[in-house]
Image 1: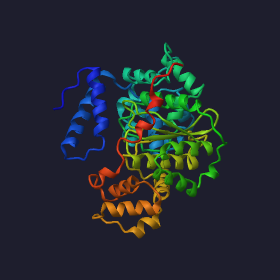
Image 2 (image 1 turned 45 degrees about the horizontal axis):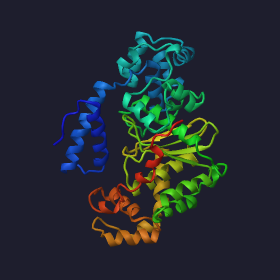
Image 3 (image 1 turned 90 degrees about the vertical axis):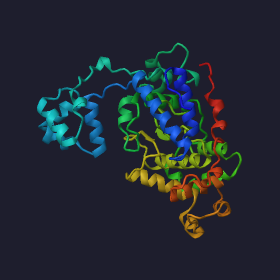
Image 4 (image 1 turned 135 degrees about the horizontal axis):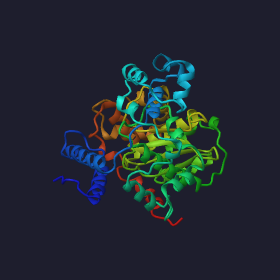
Length: 392
């Protein structure tokens, strides 16, 4: 029976159970338990770890990115080009007329537009919730006795992380995402990434579909997950695996380090073989095609659908790398496919059967059939040693 969540110990136990139930199908006892637990955890987080109020400037910029608006598009609501520039630079507060216009025409919540903008001296990195800090310390990415602000400064080496987080071009971000927890996770990834040595210099032109196919075919090997990291390092790409933090709702991210080398970061919140390879190749597409000086970070909750061109391109790249379209079409798998047919297609494609089973489930929206082929709880143990506390 699901019990109320009243303490941090209850909260941690609830998160652990949610991780176990993450792939439960709706309408089953496990699916019902997942729904109830998620609601209880969410309520506990709202009461004990509230997310800071969005500032007017952040709310405006968020809507601009969502709708691909330029400063000129704001002139009908704010005024002249000079006035828009002043507002976006933080030099002019919003008037009542501006607030009304932005609320009415751009659907920006009035409460986000009314709250006071903090002064520059009040803008250090806000610390995330206590459980987040505990995990950062447990993983060894945060030093003993180190303040959160010092940790952020060390992790990003002077980069303006709030601006970096805003400069993403994907809407594949859960609306419940806690920006402070997301910042903390990205900082942890940066710390881990700098511990890794690369054996080659990165070239986006070297990341072809053939290279991605070679990576996908490593899934058929028992040591494929570990081998993939080595192959990526030979391409000048770092692979960091860091579990998701409360409030992040992440599968993976693509970003750059201070030295300019790209990083693929993964959370393994869905501990399945098929999920590992799809997320890896999806983020590889972002690294090769989309991450740039203008867009240094892209983070994804792949449970969300997206019609954005870069997300569709990354999805297509990952799908073609794992099972080429002609092989999938020729196999002719139907809703009544057998395990033998799934294994045969995996053999032809040179990939783990979980990869085919996962594609079949996604295609036919049947997440119960072939569930035993997905390689559950086999990926995360290969990385857990990296999350144990290390003195720094």
